[in-house]
Amino acid sequence: MEHDEWEVLFDGTSFDGWHFYNGGAVTKPWELEQGAMVFYPPENRPDGQGYNIVTDKEYTNFVLSLEWKVSEGGNSGIFWGVFEDKRFVQPYETGPEIQVLDDDRHPDAKNGTTHQAGALYDLVAPSQKAVKPAGEWNTVELTVDHKSNGGRVLLNTIKIVEFPVHGAAWDAMVANSKFADWEGFGTYRTGKIGLQDHGDIVAYRNIKVKML
Image (cartoon, rainbow, N blue to C red):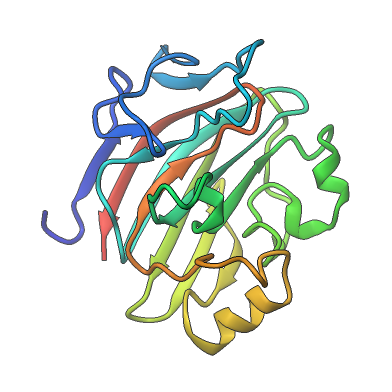
Protein backbone atom coordinates (compact mmCIF):
# COMPACT_ATOMS: atom_id res chain seq x y z
CA MET A 1 0.00 0.00 0.00
CA GLU A 2 1.28 3.45 -0.91
CA HIS A 3 1.79 6.08 1.76
CA ASP A 4 -1.08 8.59 1.93
CA GLU A 5 -3.54 5.87 0.93
CA TRP A 6 -6.21 4.86 3.41
CA GLU A 7 -6.74 1.14 4.00
CA VAL A 8 -10.26 0.31 5.12
CA LEU A 9 -10.15 -1.83 8.26
CA PHE A 10 -13.92 -2.11 8.63
CA ASP A 11 -16.37 -1.38 5.84
CA GLY A 12 -19.54 -1.93 7.84
CA THR A 13 -20.50 -5.20 6.21
CA SER A 14 -18.23 -7.88 7.71
CA PHE A 15 -15.59 -8.54 10.35
CA ASP A 16 -13.00 -9.45 7.70
CA GLY A 17 -9.54 -8.45 8.91
CA TRP A 18 -10.43 -8.83 12.61
CA HIS A 19 -10.43 -11.68 15.11
CA PHE A 20 -10.90 -12.21 18.82
CA TYR A 21 -7.71 -11.55 20.76
CA ASN A 22 -5.98 -14.92 21.16
CA GLY A 23 -9.01 -16.43 19.42
CA GLY A 24 -10.82 -17.01 16.17
CA ALA A 25 -13.28 -15.25 13.90
CA VAL A 26 -15.40 -12.44 15.34
CA THR A 27 -18.92 -13.58 16.21
CA LYS A 28 -21.37 -12.80 19.00
CA PRO A 29 -21.46 -10.83 21.23
CA TRP A 30 -20.29 -8.46 18.46
CA GLU A 31 -22.97 -7.62 15.88
CA LEU A 32 -23.13 -5.76 12.57
CA GLU A 33 -25.75 -3.01 12.64
CA GLN A 34 -26.29 -0.10 10.23
CA GLY A 35 -22.68 -0.01 9.07
CA ALA A 36 -21.21 -0.33 12.56
CA MET A 37 -19.75 -3.09 14.68
CA VAL A 38 -21.55 -3.15 18.02
CA PHE A 39 -20.54 -4.97 21.17
CA TYR A 40 -23.32 -6.23 23.44
CA PRO A 41 -21.98 -7.58 26.74
CA PRO A 42 -23.23 -11.13 27.34
CA GLU A 43 -25.42 -11.82 30.37
CA ASN A 44 -23.53 -15.02 31.12
CA ARG A 45 -19.80 -14.75 30.68
CA PRO A 46 -17.43 -17.68 31.34
CA ASP A 47 -14.87 -16.84 34.01
CA GLY A 48 -12.16 -14.68 32.52
CA GLN A 49 -13.66 -14.76 29.02
CA GLY A 50 -12.94 -11.57 27.12
CA TYR A 51 -14.30 -10.53 23.75
CA ASN A 52 -11.66 -7.99 22.76
CA ILE A 53 -10.97 -7.91 19.04
CA VAL A 54 -7.77 -7.10 17.14
CA THR A 55 -6.70 -6.63 13.54
CA ASP A 56 -5.18 -9.50 11.61
CA LYS A 57 -2.39 -7.17 10.44
CA GLU A 58 0.27 -5.36 12.45
CA TYR A 59 1.17 -1.69 12.17
CA THR A 60 4.16 0.45 13.17
CA ASN A 61 3.86 4.02 11.87
CA PHE A 62 0.32 4.99 10.99
CA VAL A 63 -2.72 7.22 11.30
CA LEU A 64 -5.87 5.46 12.51
CA SER A 65 -9.26 7.06 11.95
CA LEU A 66 -12.55 5.77 13.32
CA GLU A 67 -15.85 6.74 14.87
CA TRP A 68 -17.12 5.47 18.20
CA LYS A 69 -20.35 5.72 20.14
CA VAL A 70 -20.73 4.52 23.71
CA SER A 71 -23.83 3.70 25.72
CA GLU A 72 -24.81 5.66 28.82
CA GLY A 73 -22.30 4.85 31.53
CA GLY A 74 -20.21 2.97 28.96
CA ASN A 75 -16.49 2.27 28.79
CA SER A 76 -14.27 0.85 26.03
CA GLY A 77 -10.91 1.60 24.46
CA ILE A 78 -8.78 1.66 21.33
CA PHE A 79 -5.40 -0.09 21.50
CA TRP A 80 -2.30 -0.10 19.33
CA GLY A 81 0.99 -1.95 19.59
CA VAL A 82 -0.86 -5.06 20.79
CA PHE A 83 1.33 -8.16 20.98
CA GLU A 84 -0.79 -11.26 20.64
CA ASP A 85 0.54 -14.10 22.78
CA LYS A 86 -0.97 -16.63 25.16
CA ARG A 87 1.08 -15.26 28.06
CA PHE A 88 -0.88 -12.03 27.77
CA VAL A 89 -4.56 -12.52 28.59
CA GLN A 90 -5.72 -9.03 27.58
CA PRO A 91 -4.62 -6.69 24.79
CA TYR A 92 -4.17 -3.88 27.34
CA GLU A 93 -1.28 -5.79 28.90
CA THR A 94 0.89 -4.72 25.95
CA GLY A 95 -1.11 -2.15 23.97
CA PRO A 96 -1.51 1.45 25.14
CA GLU A 97 -5.11 2.65 25.08
CA ILE A 98 -7.04 5.67 23.91
CA GLN A 99 -9.97 5.92 26.29
CA VAL A 100 -13.56 5.54 25.06
CA LEU A 101 -15.91 6.66 27.83
CA ASP A 102 -19.12 8.34 28.89
CA ASP A 103 -17.38 11.03 30.95
CA ASP A 104 -20.63 12.21 32.47
CA ARG A 105 -21.72 8.89 33.96
CA HIS A 106 -18.88 6.38 34.15
CA PRO A 107 -17.01 6.47 37.49
CA ASP A 108 -13.61 6.13 35.80
CA ALA A 109 -13.94 9.73 34.62
CA LYS A 110 -13.69 10.77 38.27
CA ASN A 111 -10.39 8.89 38.69
CA GLY A 112 -8.33 11.71 37.22
CA THR A 113 -8.27 13.35 33.80
CA THR A 114 -5.94 10.67 32.37
CA HIS A 115 -8.94 8.30 32.53
CA GLN A 116 -11.33 10.54 30.59
CA ALA A 117 -12.47 10.17 26.99
CA GLY A 118 -9.68 10.68 24.48
CA ALA A 119 -6.91 10.30 27.05
CA LEU A 120 -3.86 8.14 26.53
CA TYR A 121 -5.12 5.98 29.38
CA ASP A 122 -3.40 6.63 32.72
CA LEU A 123 -0.59 8.45 30.90
CA VAL A 124 -1.68 11.70 29.21
CA ALA A 125 -4.86 13.66 29.92
CA PRO A 126 -6.84 15.50 27.23
CA SER A 127 -5.87 19.16 26.99
CA GLN A 128 -9.55 20.06 26.70
CA LYS A 129 -12.93 18.38 26.70
CA ALA A 130 -13.94 17.49 23.15
CA VAL A 131 -16.08 14.39 23.66
CA LYS A 132 -19.75 14.32 22.70
CA PRO A 133 -22.44 12.95 25.02
CA ALA A 134 -23.18 9.24 25.27
CA GLY A 135 -25.19 8.03 22.30
CA GLU A 136 -23.52 10.41 19.84
CA TRP A 137 -20.76 9.52 17.39
CA ASN A 138 -17.24 10.75 18.10
CA THR A 139 -14.44 10.82 15.52
CA VAL A 140 -10.94 9.87 16.64
CA GLU A 141 -7.72 10.23 14.70
CA LEU A 142 -4.72 8.56 16.33
CA THR A 143 -1.20 9.11 14.97
CA VAL A 144 1.67 6.86 16.03
CA ASP A 145 4.99 7.67 14.34
CA HIS A 146 8.16 6.05 15.64
CA LYS A 147 10.23 7.83 12.98
CA SER A 148 9.51 11.21 14.57
CA ASN A 149 8.81 9.71 18.03
CA GLY A 150 5.47 11.47 18.02
CA GLY A 151 1.94 10.45 18.88
CA ARG A 152 -1.22 12.51 18.97
CA VAL A 153 -4.97 12.19 19.34
CA LEU A 154 -7.58 14.31 17.60
CA LEU A 155 -11.07 13.98 19.04
CA ASN A 156 -13.78 15.52 16.88
CA THR A 157 -11.04 17.36 14.93
CA ILE A 158 -9.55 18.92 18.10
CA LYS A 159 -5.98 17.97 19.05
CA ILE A 160 -6.25 16.96 22.69
CA VAL A 161 -3.27 14.67 23.37
CA GLU A 162 0.38 14.58 22.30
CA PHE A 163 3.00 12.12 23.50
CA PRO A 164 6.29 10.39 22.67
CA VAL A 165 5.90 6.80 21.51
CA HIS A 166 9.22 5.30 22.63
CA GLY A 167 12.50 6.12 24.36
CA ALA A 168 13.36 7.78 27.65
CA ALA A 169 10.39 10.15 27.67
CA TRP A 170 7.95 7.30 27.02
CA ASP A 171 9.62 5.12 29.66
CA ALA A 172 9.36 7.94 32.21
CA MET A 173 5.63 8.31 31.54
CA VAL A 174 5.06 4.59 31.99
CA ALA A 175 7.15 4.54 35.17
CA ASN A 176 4.75 7.11 36.66
CA SER A 177 1.63 5.13 35.75
CA LYS A 178 -0.23 1.99 36.80
CA PHE A 179 1.71 0.17 34.07
CA ALA A 180 5.14 0.70 35.66
CA ASP A 181 5.69 -2.95 36.52
CA TRP A 182 3.81 -4.51 33.61
CA GLU A 183 6.08 -6.72 31.52
CA GLY A 184 5.69 -5.82 27.86
CA PHE A 185 3.45 -2.77 28.21
CA GLY A 186 4.10 -0.27 25.44
CA THR A 187 7.28 -2.03 24.32
CA TYR A 188 6.16 -3.36 20.93
CA ARG A 189 6.68 -0.77 18.21
CA THR A 190 4.93 -3.05 15.74
CA GLY A 191 1.63 -4.53 16.84
CA LYS A 192 -2.05 -4.98 16.24
CA ILE A 193 -4.87 -2.48 16.65
CA GLY A 194 -7.53 -3.54 19.12
CA LEU A 195 -11.00 -2.63 20.37
CA GLN A 196 -11.95 -3.33 23.95
CA ASP A 197 -14.64 -5.38 25.62
CA HIS A 198 -15.07 -3.48 28.89
CA GLY A 199 -18.48 -4.99 29.59
CA ASP A 200 -20.53 -2.13 28.12
CA ILE A 201 -22.35 -1.52 24.85
CA VAL A 202 -20.13 0.30 22.36
CA ALA A 203 -20.17 0.80 18.59
CA TYR A 204 -17.41 1.49 16.06
CA ARG A 205 -17.60 2.39 12.38
CA ASN A 206 -15.65 3.92 9.46
CA ILE A 207 -12.37 2.38 10.61
CA LYS A 208 -9.39 3.05 8.34
CA VAL A 209 -5.61 3.31 8.61
CA LYS A 210 -2.90 5.11 6.66
CA MET A 211 0.76 4.15 6.75
CA LEU A 212 3.38 6.78 7.57
